[in-house]
Length: 305
Image 1: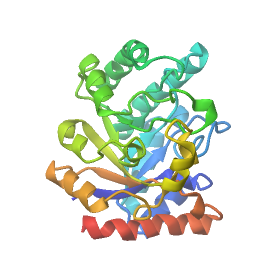
Image 2: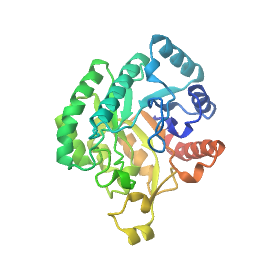
Image 3: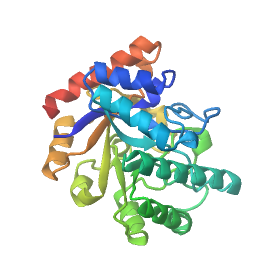
Image 4: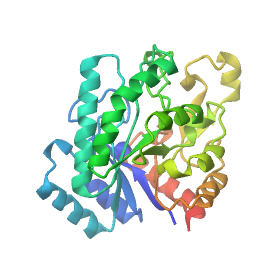
């Protein structure tokens, strides 16, 4: 069966050891570990560094692997979600270099998977971004191949606030774009970190693509989303999405989790499945955050026994 875990970003104030201890104490099989560069966060849930890849070597990797083994927990992936297609060349270069550091660290650790974003120039068309995508990502994926590492791209549009308007900060948002991306870079080391919540508010079927892209799904997220029809009726679909949607704990939004997990089992997915908590109703304290993760665990266990 799938290995249930969570995304470590929500526990940003805890150390690597404390996150692993929490996972072990609460029956989780894995954790998607955040590996942002040390520094100030650019947005919510960013800037979290539970594993510092700048200091990664065989000795540090040995310590990490020994620690997680002693606790019975795996690392599902090393995560970092910047904008490698940022029109600012210096920013883009920095993001790309850090992704490569994570790829190398994943190779040393034996984790196998990096989770990230493609990025996007929000002021350019999809077609223009695809040209830049091929130029930027071809050498990144080649580097991943050389290190025997898989890169799993999350399908979040990163189009929630005014500063991300009009086109969002991540290209890999729809099945149509995925087809074009995989045609441009057909590498089998290049795939998806599949999150159904991002399809809901785009009015895209979140079940059907699972079957078409079954060989590209390397990692999955469990996060719910709720659309507020009264708010949508007021602001319309051209508004920034957070005016009419809200991320929720699994089971508290609009996703049919039975159908989603059923589709994953249909394709034989037996990989890592990580709960992602971004529900503001559960962020007032560390205790409440921890409870939100265990509430989500309890809900999803009915489908994963």
